[in-house]
Amino acid sequence: MRKPVIAGNWKLYKTKDEALALIEELAPLVAGVTNVEIVVAPVFTVIPTLVGALSGTGISLAAQDVFWEEEGAYTGEVSPRMLLDAGASHVIIGHSERRQYFGETDGTVNRKIKAALKGALVPIFCIGETLNSREAGETFKVLERQLKGGLEGLSETQFAPVIIAYEPVWAIGTGKVATDEQAQEAHAFIRGVVAELYGKNAADKVRILYGGSVKPENVKGLMSCPDIDGALVGGASLKGSSFASIVRFGE
Ligand code: PGA
Image: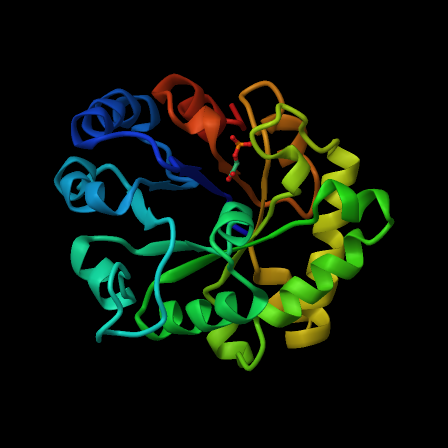
């Protein structure tokens, strides 16, 4: 019932030519896949370059961040309107690297989600606990705080397009994937918080992606969990062959 989403977060990798080469490799490998939504998130400067290459492939473009104002004296920022203009349809918001290195808080994440939705972009809203929080037994507390903080003031209708990504910080780029049980437990909890905020219907519909060391070898197990609706993939999305295997997890 929930269409899976497989999104590649390219982070600070791939120039224009490298990105085009990656799409040239990836597109034929995922041609004909219609049961999975495929998204790639290159750096800002590469978004317009990929529009042509992706047309007709069914692959959507995401940005990795966005600012909350439409325009103004905000040196260095990029607004939802400008992302849409560049060719993006989705935007990753609140990635743990943004929270860790660039001072993002639940408050800034909330403003960005609202701005993205107002600008007709689909937010991929990232949450996840650090190793310290997990070891202190605070995983659910952190997830609940991040969810409620990030979604504050959004109505059920506004929330409807939002995609959530659960990314335990200790699993990102470390090769230490969460076990299927750990991931499923967190996803079920997240869906429960969405039910509390917006009701059962919204909770049944929301796609919750898992992120953190997803690879072709572990994606099947993760995707067989009832509350896991896709993946946000970093390292393994930088190669067409591995990302395509992840997209084709069900085959
Ligand atoms: P990883 O990154 O797949 O390299 O662990 C995931 C992410 O940061 O979105």
